[in-house]
Length: 147
Image (cartoon, rainbow, N blue to C red; front, side):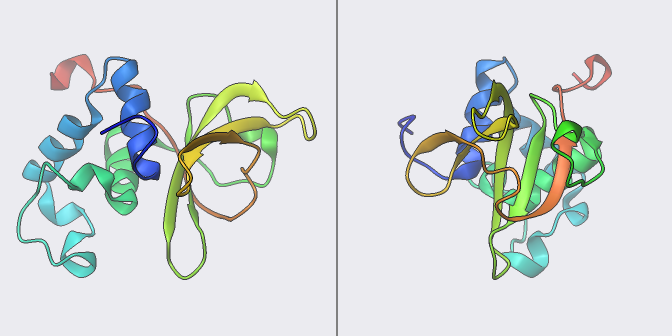
């Protein structure tokens, strides 16, 4: 998929790929072995993992990061969010969204910026507190023991 298209989860997948982590594969493998730990039965009526779409669903990424990474406390303090961490939001109406905290700060607020895609292509913006935060995660890739 071209880099200027896709959804919010595609930005996360691309970022990890550029760091040498195949998040698409990692999510699919975890779902194959722990299918019932994921929200698919209620949300998408999935009968089995699907390597083509599972990684593109924010609730699946939230579950994966909670299981395989580190789930961090939610906060309204900007200093609690560091570059490389992932944040999820509810945009309203139970519409999930995900972005990555990056190491560039906003000139206006001084907060770290977020790389995300909310339908207009990838953007780096000061949106950390624009929506209701539903998750905060840290994931550095698979542990050597799991490879």
